Length: 79
Image (tube, rainbow, N blue to C red; front, side):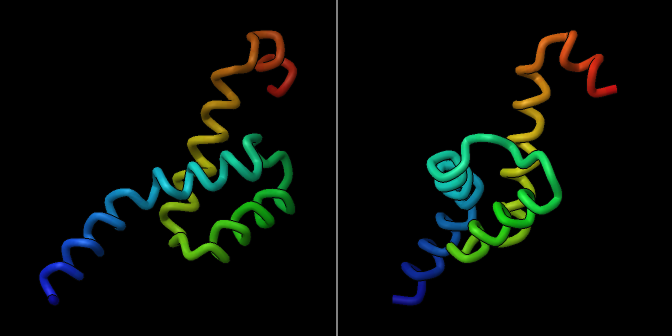
């Protein structure tokens, strides 16, 4: 039934970030620290069918979480 398919597609779209984040967490769990590593993580998620918007959200969230977990001394060293 077409309505059922449309409903399922909508559910998948609304949960894509959470699903991509779960896959990323199982495989990497650490934000990329170089452009090469970022590209590798992006390719990994893209190969599993996630769209570029979800992939970008996952990597931005990972980088933000990593920044928030740093001590003030680590943050000063990066600046």
